[in-house]
Length: 200
Image (cartoon, rainbow, N blue to C red; front, side, top):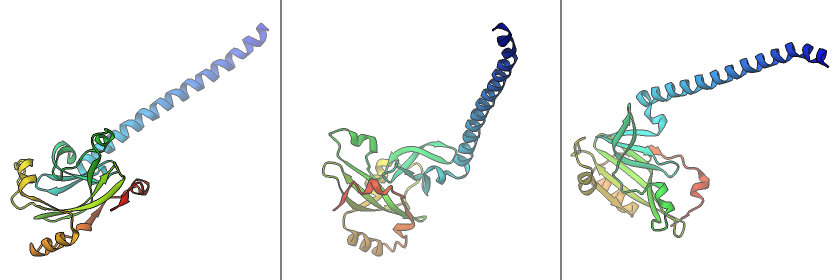
């Protein structure tokens, strides 16, 4: 028996060495992968923020991915590189997690938008969780008087115009000679999410 054990010892040691080396290689690969992802992420933050769901629409305003529900229009104040991660909502939306509480049923997110140096046009989906219905609203944001120092309350109260009627919205755009196409940028929804709501 001892002879068998003594013969197996070198073999067992060899297996353990191979396993240990494999473990070190795996740990090294995982650490290298994490570092690579971290570096690539930071490169995107500084060079291609759109890939991370942050879209600069001018005058300190950003369309930011609303985690599956649509875009949020923010006056950005949380940045990493050129990527906006947070700010004050200009179109008065409710964040998705807040909808989990019983006393909040309605949330609103941008589904389509277009912009130029003077205007932002936005179409929103208004989700009502109490009866699982959805309707649309339309917004015109006049960027001309806005600077990066303009307070968000001033922007919301003076330079944001909301409409529930698409024909009225189109008429105002025509009267103001706004040539921006509202469907320049569309949110890529998960169809199963939208199918949970009935369009009003």
